[in-house]
Amino acid sequence: MSASPSGQDGPPRLAVVGIPGNRRLALFQDAVRAAGLPPAREIGWLDVVRGRAGFTAGETVRLDSPGEDPEVHRLLSGVADPTRVEGTGRWYERFTAAARAVGRAAGAAGAKVLDDPEELAVLFDKRLTHGVLDGAGVPVPLSPTSGPAAPAVTGWADVRERMAAAGVRGAFVKIAHGSSASGVLAVRTAGPGRVSAVTSVERDGAGRLYNSLRVRRYTAEREVAAIVDTLAPDGLHIERWMPKGTQRGRSADLRVVVIAGRATHVVVRTSASPMTNLHLGGARGDLDALRATVDAAGGSFAAALATCEAAAGCFPATHCVGVDLLPAPSWRRYTVGEVNAFGDLLPGLTGLPERAAAGLDTYAAQLAALPGRPARTATATTAFATATTPSLPRPERQDV
Image 1 (cartoon, rainbow, N blue to C red):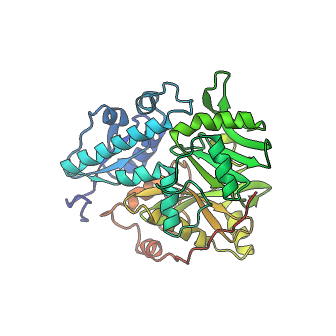
Image 2 (tube, one colour):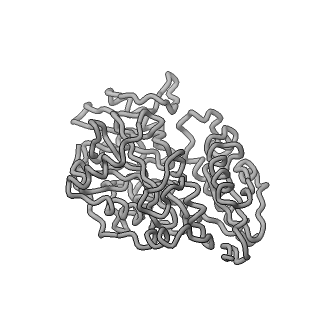
Image 3 (cartoon, rainbow, N blue to C red):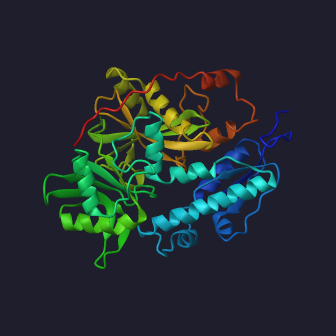
């Protein structure tokens, strides 16, 4: 019988920190049952935030998203309405403090945490993540806000100045601690007073900002400036707007799930807007067609996966991440746009057929990759461990 991560015999005793009743925990528990493991003990983020969470020796602790719970959102951000965009700076401070508290409590109890709190603190700051990736040689968009030493962006005037200094006419302006395209603006400038921004942010008459499921375009600089000035106190990150490949006339990128260092699942996301997030009108594209396009262009799908694995390798103490990969129009170069700590919510998606997670969803694949779990088959294990890892291509330097 294999040893568990805690050093005890038998299957791992799992605990998961998340939102009880949430679809994420339901899908994870389904995978736990299908794997023949005892149900994972659930610890609510609400209990963590209120200091009531405890762990026991020998548990393997998974951290899942604290999202989709209005009370948890209020306690972390200080904003009662979960559709509001503001408050992400406070949310980040309180969330990272809560994650570190989990790490301390689990360690003191003799439990093992699958997601390192210090790495989560980097992953939830786009400026820090970009700096780590760039320092490791992972291709990323040009950014004047990368790394901990970059001066803070104080408002729209800073954004315009830094874009101009970098020679960038098109940029994504992102809240540093956002997710799911919250607070993201795809900005184009063309001289004084000539500005447009595509975003899901809606601004009401009182100047409050809300997340919307409708992508809209602002063409008045004063409107763009008002949104950016409101977001700036929470922290902003600026990245060059990289032109992307297309599929059936729609802009395309990839969400690649990397588990225990190996790329396992890929979903193509296409959109008529700069944001490909599925909840903002994006749609799942055709992976087989994408692979054929890459081959026809003389590119390498294996190199694309290797780029994602290199990005995930910058966070070796985090069991699973979702990497957003941006293909150049040539389909021969790739740039990493994001690394997401909780980027595995892809219901119905099974693993790449040539890799060890074939036939498994993202949660089942994470369980199969736990230390001490028996391999599915010798053939799959060999394929998983010997996947090709070609050298990383550098991004094409283009602008819009």
